[in-house]
Length: 252
Ligand code: PGA
Image (spheres, rainbow, N blue to C red):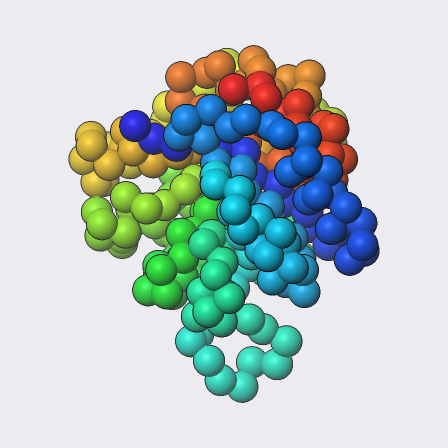
């Protein structure tokens, strides 16, 4: 049975003490995670270890990095490798987020290389895909997502695909307050699962968690998470407020 996941992508937000306070508040709420459900915090790099330390003894809670470099090591000033993340116990890494694509020119080919490097280090990639507003308005959203999937994940082996998490995040919904409707999300998630099936077979397609991201909040999470192919959310803004993040976790 595939996992239900709520992941909080903090982006470049929160000071160190605010970050710790947020995690403590979530943990002290005594939220009971339903079976097969994970909560992932994706703080900025400098906070990974301290958040990780707080999560010890809290089964079901994990950390993710927001990025990693495609090389193992070397003269790449300012970068962090997957093996470095693995060495401090990071279990997941968000790759190909639309902000990385938009501001840092990250390409599908780079996402593929980063994801392979992460997998080689034993880290599960949370690979993001999603169409821009112009593409949605032109009705070509499936074409764009198909191309992203093919070029970033198409060369994976079935074993590699089996441990992926995919996040569908329409660019027009990220940070805008406009979310995809439940039918729009379900349609795209089913399309992504169909792609997984055609590439890697039914068993793998049924096992991969596909998260929705883009203005997911307490008011819309229950409806989105009720869709059969929506296995949880990648949450930006609402993950910075403990009460909102908790309500989203409780939406399952
Ligand atoms: P948002 O961001 O929830 O603030 O729209 C989601 C994301 O970028 O992962």
